[in-house]
Image (cartoon, rainbow, N blue to C red):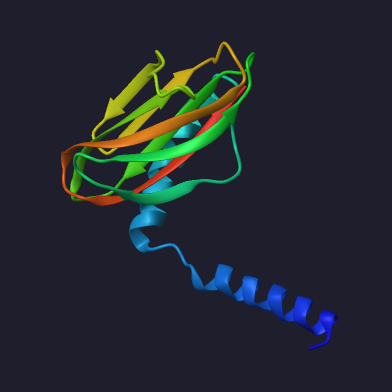
Length: 144
């Protein structure tokens, strides 16, 4: 097959796969809740980072997202979820798996964790179901 045709076909298939993966109504609502919470931190000069992570939060299971963070910046990780989840929590771990000390906010289906890393590197943000049943969640983060 012609190489240019093969490349064009690959790009087309990738484009279709991105279109086919639509957000569910629950993910859209969870993202709205996470963005509403993150907007509160914008009053303190935080900027919401483009992008988000959606998934399913289950009881007795961690939903982890790996992020690269930089010393000298401050971060807030905001999460929202939908019914039947009743309460969630957000935690941050360093690259060795040790939980870091954060400022935290929890209000039922919304939670956030904020901190300023002392060192640059990979960190892991955990969204945990504290009360309720399996549900969709969305995580966004802000920085300054």
